[in-house]
Image 1 (spheres, rainbow, N blue to C red):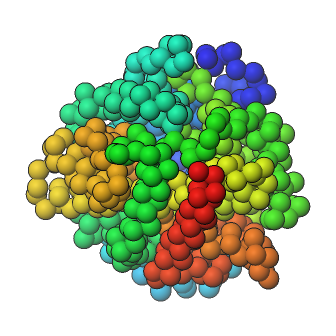
Image 2: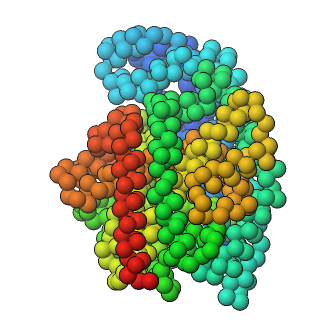
Image 3: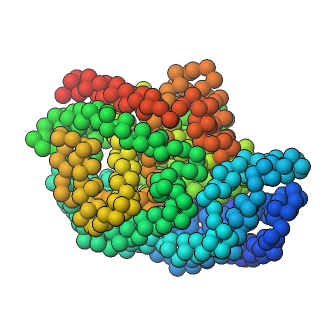
Length: 596
């Protein structure tokens, strides 16, 4: 469907950002004036407590403005990536962001050109700086990774010049990618990102196989181009980590959150030690469907007899609100605003960015984009993204801008808590064992896709970055072979790792935000612990969780989690999550014995 054919109430309301193009231009011009003011203060920022405070206040205003302009521009663009106005807004926001980055490149060196003791003295001298104390502490952790003013300027220019791989992949993947036509029940339809999972989950095995091979044919035919994009991205990572004196891109990516590489490795190693539950689940599916061989295009089919339930968006809304009721009346009331105040862009349209996401800027409602298809997975996705939205809403309304943005390490926890609560609600309200099996296996599939699969992705990223750093050749074949071997390891002998699955790496947009995906796995494990306590009515669990949602980035993420009783430096939460997976799997076995 074309964007202009979607009802207004089914699209997000971006007028909360700017009611007119003129308002956009006014903020754009104001941002340039603030930038000029900051540049004029070069050499004076650390002169006194007053100078530092004035700079920090200006920087906060600048950051809020560019965030508002940038998010609005990209939300418009992502609504329809073919729309010319959206492309213009995106490019204009990018250029402003690049100018700010370049013109303020001197700031980092100037701020870190004094000792941290000197900064502590300024904070003691002027109480207004106390609100920036943690931000300054985090900044001064980078003291040894910061270069001279001129070197920082060169790095800024180089980063702006190099940093187009994500946008290039997005243009190919969203605007240019065509996967052809498939025939479904006698009707010819276009295969897209939005309907791929739905089609590869179809009961018709012949259709699943056709869809699987046709979809990955595109990535096979373009994997030379995509390899060059991804290789360039990896080289950028290594360049930046090297010039900033980190031992690796992985170390650099974890540093801001004050997380040791051991946390990343602990996740991978713990999963390696606990692959058997996934192998057992794949065997259950294989036996349930009576397959001599189970292929990658067989692992998405619902383990239920007959047609699966379909939901309207209004029904999904009602279900989600009831499911999250264990979080209390205030949470439910606040979540209702998302539906009433048009935070949500509901349906797919031609050119709309694939997948689902939540995004927003400080002081403005968080926005959610989904491509609602009416399936149980669509309901789960809606609950997931609204979890992100509520995390953003509570952080923004509880914290000053400086600490409102929560780190990505924590970003998947609120969304997953919502999903776990939804799954619990659906299982408890299932009308029969067949439907109950649907929701139990939905949890198992979500765990597989989030904990096991995202860890597989994380291991792939680690391996290929190490290959480049060690001087090994990065080619389409080497990337595909690494991915293929990992797929065989993670899925085991009960699944045939079809040859075309080796091209899956080429379709993963998150690989252009390096070492991001492992946080899905750690976040899922942490969320299971939190949600279990809430569902068990553990004393203080709900209150601690709402405090977590309101914490933003006011502490280091591991400390924020420890306040909820979750320590991700250990194997315990990961192993506990795997035990929950195994327990749910046992329930699935019991139901299968009854319904078969």
